Length: 131
Image (cartoon, rainbow, N blue to C red; front, side, top):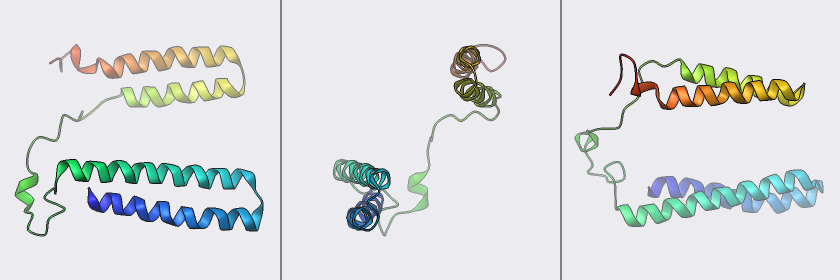
């Protein structure tokens, strides 16, 4: 986690230097606010990764003598095929179209999104792939 923390520390330092320069040269409050918030997010992630690095100890990819075999093991279950993400994306499209054009389209999209989320969550609790 030390490498990841270092990357975000570099990002936060870069943004801490660039933000006041941008503010002085442009007087743009929107861009300055966006850069300030981006600095805060980068610093927050760097702090969290440094905390994790201190708690976890070195991982095999952080050590010079680490072997590939040390990373073997269970990474979790990943669905080989699922149509529910496509349904969720279509429902999100209807929601955003509803935000632009009409409230009743938004309600239809929200209902479709709820169905898509429920279907995605309970995909492996029924049917031929039930656990």
